[in-house]
Image 1 (cartoon, rainbow, N blue to C red):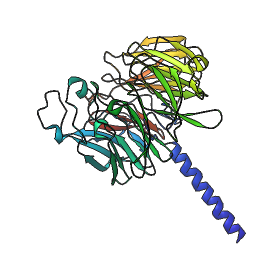
Image 2: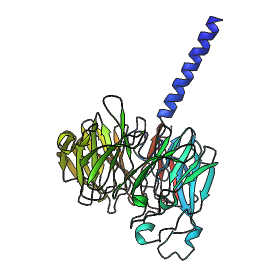
Image 3: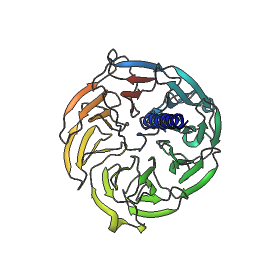
Image 4: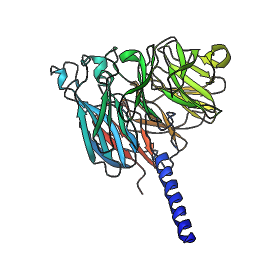
Length: 424
């Protein structure tokens, strides 16, 4: 009997371990589980094309700039249809539909596609809006479901089978560029930066969508919030906004500290490594390094360095003592993370701008350009281009950042979702 019990316990522990490994491989929110744009996956392809290393290609039921995310055997992403596909669209804005889509990660089949109408008045279509559309925020997912943010149309929650759980209104304010931030999950909360819609960060209960707490006076921030780990084992929520970088208690929304930040609006995500935060932003492009964990104004005590290089839209990665990113102006940067000194600055082989953020995996940097393919660099402090990959049969823009899991790259264009991997 004891042997049987021991065997059962061992099998149970083994099953937990395999589940944990599987979940660890998931890319469950914008820029991966930690928000740092880093995957531990190996064996990834360096080269691909329309007829090389494409495992499957799926036509999507709408356009969108959001990135794919993964949980279990499902790939989730958002899209929009019915209105706003071109600047001179004369259709009724109320015909807009906002989609959350689940795709089978093994074969690319659409498992479910659910959509909702607008919640508030639809922002008028303009050249700037049509450039990225009404589905820019990347969803977040876990075992409780998938959560998506559609700007003035609020937050929507589905279970993993596509059943609508709730919708939440987080404001109806607009700005020229539209909405861009993505939700993140923390314990029982969905945390959403609705700076553009209501100057507020909301923590919503996963089960109901009710407000758990909110932090107001969030200024000109299109950025996705970041949960950061402190040396004492505690965590903070960090939001980078115009003029200030802010630290909050993620359980209560209490503001803990402020640091003088970038004197312009902010889009890039704050990343962390070993107790240091790296913050980019502003049209003039700046970068700041600081330590979290302080109280009050920590500008003089916790800011480590500030330099006049950075990115307006795209987010960086940290690897082996260096920061890497590709700015929206098409320039690849490498900085010494200790002091902010530029190690290299190199123009990428693209004429267009970049909206997608760099991702790191398998000692390679993947940089998605809008209209000139994906550039692959070696992750070393010297510019070494390994490949530039185009899918010649797809003329859509590549606005979304890739998702990486279990040896595969999931890449989205306006019309299609791809799974890319080395074929045996």
